[in-house]
Image 1 (cartoon, rainbow, N blue to C red):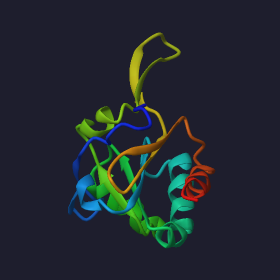
Image 2 (tube, rainbow, N blue to C red; image 1 turned 120 degrees about the vertical axis):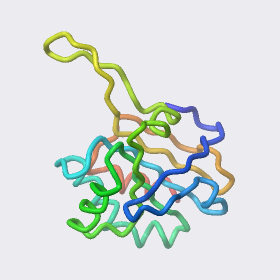
Image 3 (tube, helix red, strand yellow; image 1 turned 180 degrees about the vertical axis):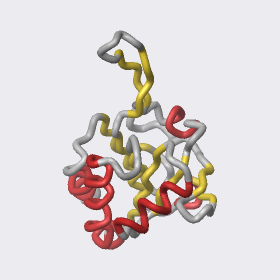
Image 4 (tube, rainbow, N blue to C red; image 1 turned 90 degrees about the horizontal axis):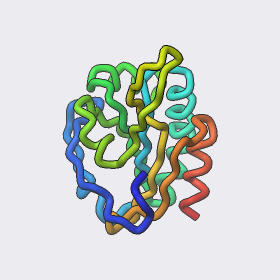
Length: 152
């Protein structure tokens, strides 16, 4: 995880509609940037739907929600449509942003093989682009409410 107080790494990623988003596009707004392992899985769906349900409250507090995974633009589009998600999903198949935000860890499988996997993590970035909160190993179903509380 990146440390609180550091400048959030700039990025440029396509969303579920193929439109490119840069972190700098959101200067002047708080950004909830959450990283999740995979579209359409139980935990990730629970997390995304929770953010979707609370999205109007995030907007009221002047914050945007951006979800990031290594899934493709097409996968994100299906995920958005199936669950009616009202916020932006960013596609990072090359893992450039996922690596820049330090949310990958090495783990060992039951067979002894070492792999790298994404850890469900969330950052709160302030209006100037500085990380003000950083949470690793977040609980999927509680993450949206937790982050909404951090905006107070």
